[in-house]
Structure formats: C-alpha cells, structure tokens
Image (cartoon, rainbow, N blue to C red):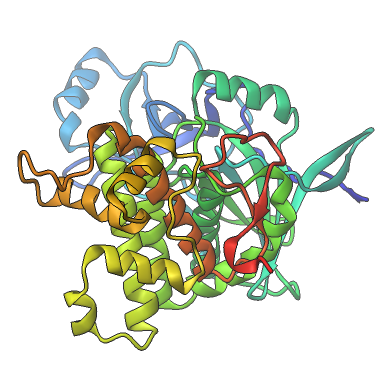
Length: 434
C-alpha cells in the first residue's frame, strides 16, 4: 500500500477560503519608471472565478497617499522575486491597502531546471483510485496514477475530501479537489515549458472525464528540496455542478489506461487541435442553455469528427464530403465506429418521431440542424420543438462515443441515454461488443 499523501502549501481549509501565496514586500512601479517596495501580499481568490490578486499597503503621509491615488491608473503592482516569497505571517488587518489588481505576469523563478512539480486540481472528477495510507488512516480510493509519454503523474484526493466535496457540490463553487505530482519516468530534469504541455493535456483529460471544465493550478517546481519555479495561476474552470459524462468513478482504471493514448494524441499538433475543439464542443454541448446552443455544438462536433477521421485521415475526398448531405455525413461518421444510427427506445418522443417519419437518428439530427442553421418559418421539415431535448441528448451521446472511438477506447462507459444512471451502471462501447 502506498503512503504519504501529496502535500501543497496552497490548500484551502474550507470552500472559498483565501489562499495566501505571499506576505511581504511587493514591487510598485510608477509610470516614470521609479520602483518602490511596499508591504503587501499575493493571494489566490476563488470568486467570481479563480484568480490571483496582488495587494500593496503603505503608511505614507496623507499628501503622499493622495498623490499615489491620483496616479492609480499609471501604477503597476508586480510580484516579488522567488527568493523573497514568504508566507510566514498573516495580513495586517490595519494595513491601508491602496492598490489591488491581478498581476500582468504570474511566474517566478527559473523555467529551465526542475525534477518534480506539485500542483492543484480545481473541481476535478470523482475518481476511485488505489488505497493510500495517510498517517494513521487508510483512504481506500485516494490515489490515481497516470503514466505515459515518459511522464509519471500521481493524483491524490485532498484530505477531508468527502466533507469538502459535499460542501463544494452544495454551493456549486470552486475548490481544490486533488493534489498532483509530475515527474519524469527516470527522474530526470525538465523545463517548465515541457511540464506545461502535460498539465494542459491533463486539464483537458480531466474535463473529458467530468463533462465540465477542470483546471490545474498553482504549480510549484522543485529541484531537489528547493523551490525553483512558481506559477500563481489557474485555467478555465466551471463551477462544481452536475453534468452528463461517459465516465463513472468505477471506471477509474479504464481512465488510467486511456491516458497514454490521450497524451499521445495531444503531442501530435494536428491531433491536439482537433482534440481541443472536439472536447470544447462536447463540454459546451453539455450545458444546453438554451438547448439550441448545446444541440448545435454537438452536431458541429460530429461534423468535425467525421471530417478529420474520414477525409483528413481517411479515403473520402474533400469534394465528395462537401457534397454529401448533413444526415449522410453523420451516418458515415457513426458507421466508422459501429455506433447505431437508430434512436434508442428510451428517447420515446424522438423514437416516435423517427417511426412516424420513417427515418433514423442522423436524419432527425440533420432536421434539427437545419432548423437552427437554415431556419425556414413554417417548414414541415423542421424538427418539432417537443423532441428537441431528446435530440440534444442523442447528439451529445453520438459525439462522446465518436471521441471515445477516435481515442481507441474499448472499455465500458456510462450511456447517457440510459434512464438508470446510478453509480456503477455501465456497459461496453458499441465497437467492443461481440
């Protein structure tokens, strides 16, 4: 059994607690180029979305303070040097903070030499990993290992994750759900640019598991025991709310197996572009507000998946593809991964529409697409409004299956059209069935 949970100094005690990054001197630069070091602090704030803030305080004379306020728009607050970073004291509540802003730069230290990185994950998915002994207790599902591409990635659930997660879910907020560590397989040194590629890929991968945007944040680069590099920033992240996804926490071993392929696709520039767009379309389609937006994004993603697989990397010619109807393009895309074109019986209204009109799922999705992309008032060919929610569900199901197929996934998944969506209710992807 593995021991010692990964630790970060940037772990909040409760949801939306301010994280203190630095308490000490911060540089102030005036428009005329003068620099002054003022007492201040750097914090990581959670609302309205996670971001870094620098605050500077001083005790000048009233005349000096008025002069600074007059220059406010022309005064820049910077970050301390790495050697000056300290977190040993709390902010002085009597300090007169006169400048508050997000820093123009968030990185400190040397980007070229480190041997491990500790980082936070904001609003990560529920993962059921491997047992971890943490001091005197055993956490049976705390650790996940993602190894591939010459990298070893370890993700640990934060301590007290259940109570913290329950509160995070209740308020739909932001918080650290996991702490990660990144190393080279053979323990060698690496630069920040290399690590940022892997951490960027990880954010997309975890978002693909969760169905909402997940972010890595606040990485700390170490060389031995010394801090070599800091990046006080976070990426795009959604509030901690429920969402549809193919992933179920019981499928964590399958996610560990999928990671090397995902990273390999990410490291191919043309594939990375497609992967970014497909996941962006899929996550955007998961938030149907309104349903027309989610629906259109899903159908657009299907068209991209077909184009990339059947034209760019297949035998279909571009001219023939462009002359093909939207329904036939969707149908060909589904056929590439043996995804059924029929409408699932659980989507009762949509299935009735398919039966009444004698068409399949791709034909219905094309009708919905035409309703939004090429509206013709009063057209009988438009998809009826009452079946649009189920059409959206069908389109997003098709899209996530295409993503899984493109990534070569052959395990089990949670089918979003299944009304029984309890934990552990999963089935084989269509192309892996006998």
